[in-house]
Picture 1: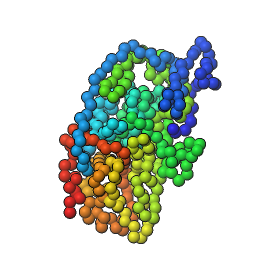
Picture 2: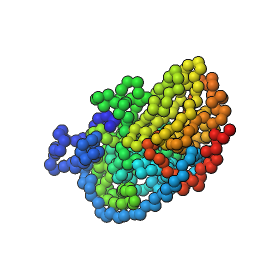
Picture 3: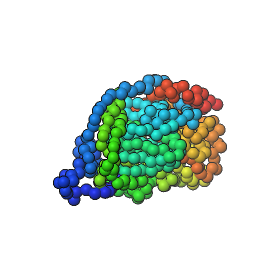
Picture 4: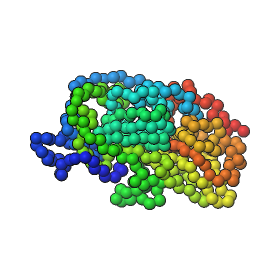
Length: 380
Ligand SMILES: [Fe+2]
């Protein structure tokens, strides 16, 4: 849930009409079968209209079951395909997938993920997300959240590089950030005002429309050809819609002694959390150790995407690197980094953490491109 938004025209009462000669078609777009957050969209045309429907097989990544710490420099990947076919899955389990996208072209079709919420982090680039809710622009440092079921298209304006997370479980603002009214509490790293909500677009009324909506299911796509305009929404209101949140608007939580990852939490889901390491002053006790203490994540895997700045607690990391630190193996600063960190006053890093409560598997794409010696970087 974000907060209530109302855009455009709609009947005074839900489930009613204003003008019987100019009927609007109301669509409920919501989670948990009418029971959780939702929006109501008012279409000029029938939103269920379709001309043909066709199955398209999908290639699924193989599952490599070998547990060790890992590092990949994703900067090495070239631009490839579009926003859907260009997705390079690197890590996954039964609940989520994580990877990068560097699209070469904009697609001529629309996309709808029927089974997963989608969260993107814009490592660089700019553009727009078009959906029936309107236009969300994006830029470097934005998270983009797309609720499952949203029909959308991404138009890239400047060359773009995304980290993506797709999740079978709902991705949400952490419960602990919300007061009993659903407003974000004081003292949290961001506030309701910080979200980028869709800018309303006037509906398309006339013209010839002929396009495909590619609907993503677990093992295939279903391609739906339509004749009616995609952007035919006269108005909508509710709590569920695509939004953006820029890391530069966030306020990091800092302390006298080292603050653990939960203070950097940005989003939560049933089987993982997403955190953001932001530029910040280090801990202010005169004998504080700035780098993270060694940790043994006994029941979680910890993935970090390094976006910008100086990553003091890791050796050999560059912008676009992803590390995976696995359960059952202790990790922390590599030899020499703890001593080197003493006296440091702050960091300019921006990094995205995904902590998963079930083991992550790697794909062949990951295996064929990773830094093989990384697990030995703790060798004395
Ligand atoms: Fe860690």
